[in-house]
Length: 440
Ligand code: GDP
Ligand code: MG
Image 1 (cartoon, helix red, strand yellow):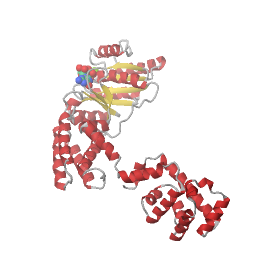
Image 2: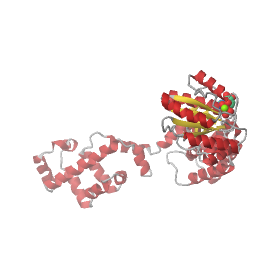
Image 3: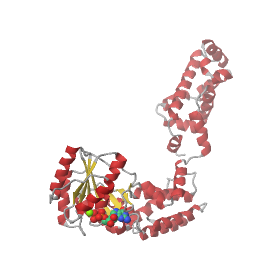
Image 4: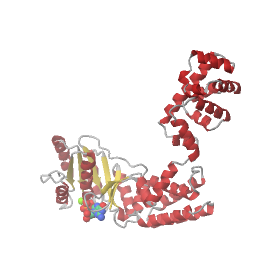
């Protein structure tokens, strides 16, 4: 699926990754290629324009990661933008109400009936819910039989319509039956048309009014490209669509539909149909799709690397400080010295709640910092490593040695304990996030 666009994007980015240094001309050439690849994949022009502009802006702007080469950075940016284009984060199925109604709409032949059965199977297998299939397509003569056959094949119950001829009556009955028999979800197949028409829309509106579906999916055929986008606009104008089920992504679709539907209609693709078999159906993950388009292995490692985008040495150092079980007085001394230099530690400390105060306490001025150092320096090595042994007489000895009072020694020990607690509380946190927060 999406092979053509995938190949072209991959080759552009591969070329770029070979470059040690990327000039604006390189970038524009690459963006021109990306633009052509997307247009060739039948992605709508405004979407392409916006996409290219965003990648360009990001590539030239601040959102760059120092540990990646410029070419890798652009690949990462393209990946992120593709993910966004495809709808961002994957959304789980929303099931509200008892039963939770799910309604499928779409033109004839797009795969509604097949998708209704596949979705019901997905709900039963993946979510473990009792689900009832509801044949509310009263237009096509054999529509009910088709759903019944699929139901038999997948071992899923299908509501018997008892010769009811209106879809409204069928869905009303479905809700009653489902409640009575304990079905938690009903999946409703509806009639389609060759083209969008008023009669169909009015019928679907009435059905939706009765069902109050917790998910209302448009089923669209990926092979129809921009038509799928237009269908999403037309149906979306009348019904509160919550998502698109994009079928036939296994075919030689150019991918334009998948790539433009979400950004044009603001209705995300939620599921993908990838074949004729019951199991050829999956939750649509924009980020995975983006990775697939850009060449899975390659990009995933790159994205991982980008997520770890930080200077390995600094991270190791920070990690050591954060993860160290015993943050002893020697470490504290080291940090106090760092604090004076205004280094990484100092910057990091500013990020933590309550630390500004502690820092103000810990480093009010050069004089006090020196006194703190002096106190630690007049301790024995054993005392610095195991501060818990510092009792009353040791405190007096240390105070004398540092030319200060026992109160001062006590204060320093309190400050050390506070800092240690802080370091502990930071341990669960991802140091990478801290570093990113610091702009490193
Ligand atoms: P409806 O008219 O919208 O209800 O469409 P159907 O469910 O009857 O499907 C029309 C045709 O598309 C059938 O032959 C299905 O087997 C086929 N179909 C549906 N989904 C997919 C898919 O994801 N991949 C492929 N290859 N065929 C599909
Ligand atoms: Mg059908």
